[in-house]
Amino acid sequence: MKIKTAFGNDNLVYDDSMKVRTAVFIQEQQIDAAIEQDENENRCLYYVGYIDNKPVTTARVMTTEQGTLVQRVCTLQEYRHQGLSSQIFKAIEHNAKINDVDQVWLFAQDHAQNFYLNNGYKVVGDQVMEAGVAHHKMIKKLSK
Image 1 (cartoon, helix red, strand yellow):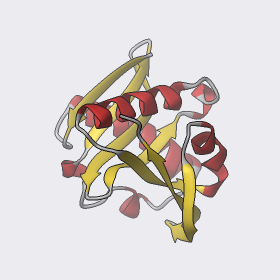
Image 2 (image 1 turned 45 degrees about the horizontal axis):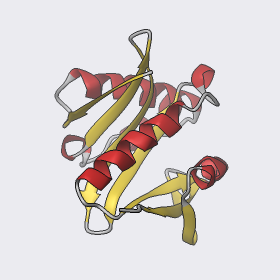
Image 3 (image 1 turned 90 degrees about the vertical axis):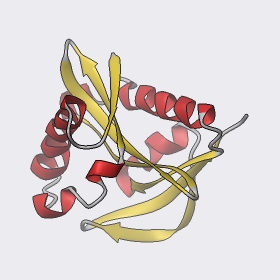
């Protein structure tokens, strides 16, 4: 898989990210399109994984006071369980370390918690609802 990154929402990587997000969040999970995009779209770094030039997995990242925040993680249904999102996370964590960030955090959909647990993330805090889906905050401390 080839991973491309780009900052902001005015580029082809963002457009490809939106193709994956639309297929997974809006069409498959039935999340309201009006809330799937938000005010942070132009403030994020987008990661998109490509197979044969087709965008198949994506995540967006924002730098926060708590570390690197990862959001909108998804993979097209026919490409799941192949380690593609794990590759995206390795790239995100590598870039965080390069920038002296000591932790990566996110709000994981509860049904996807095992993926994050298997990648070294730990659940912190109580369940929260986002877009009608149960989530938990998860954190991974990065070693220096």
